[in-house]
Length: 285
Image 1: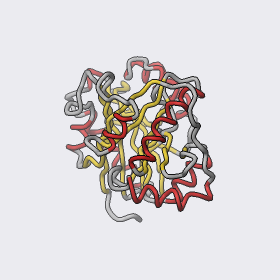
Image 2 (image 1 turned 45 degrees about the vertical axis):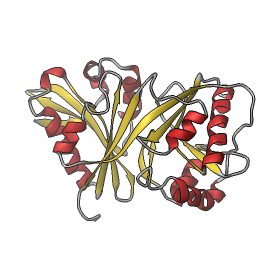
Image 3 (image 1 turned 180 degrees about the horizontal axis):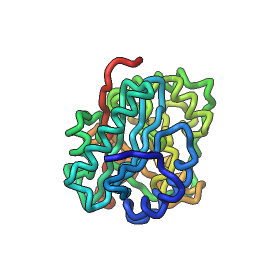
Image 4 (image 1 turned 30 degrees about the vertical axis):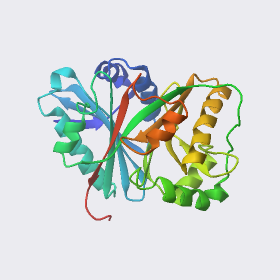
């Protein structure tokens, strides 16, 4: 199997691989001009059969995304060859860890998620399992507050107290799964991706990037009473943003379920899951 950088001429072929998914083609137009990442196709006998992308998102951390294989290439080792290539390239650019995300819905269930078995066979471990909770928007009510980056240390302490272990120490955002740290919170605050209640006793980290047709929240943290207030406020924020509702990615089976249910969220009507996977590539060089 041979690999080469993606070019603009590959757009229609990539569309075929992903079933012309609009979200992927929108990403293609950005990715193909981004020199900071490895965006490649895999070829067999001169024919493009797969595509993927690898990029550094931290000092020793790389993110693996956009893996797609043509139907005819499945079961022929094409996916395994692409993952092996990604591992080698991540190590080459200095990463000690490689992370990826797989997704599933009502058509797959959490136990038959596409790509999860492929990553497991390549040595990845499942770091975090998330399930989606949805609630419709509400009018009125108290709006959330946008804290500044100068509050990052205090906000991280709130996460440490209420959510760090539940979320496996990571922020499962739309542009890559970062390590949770004060620096991460400060960066998100500068991007206006951190929301708190007026009391400051709970917080939400917005996912960012393409995703749900909803106010998409990657992490929530706070004591139960403050957390319920926050979850209600997120439904008001969705209304202000002109979105149909709010969506919270919560660790599967966590204690957050009780607070989410009290605030009117449901995880059964439109079930969706995300698994975060991580592979150790050896010492950071």
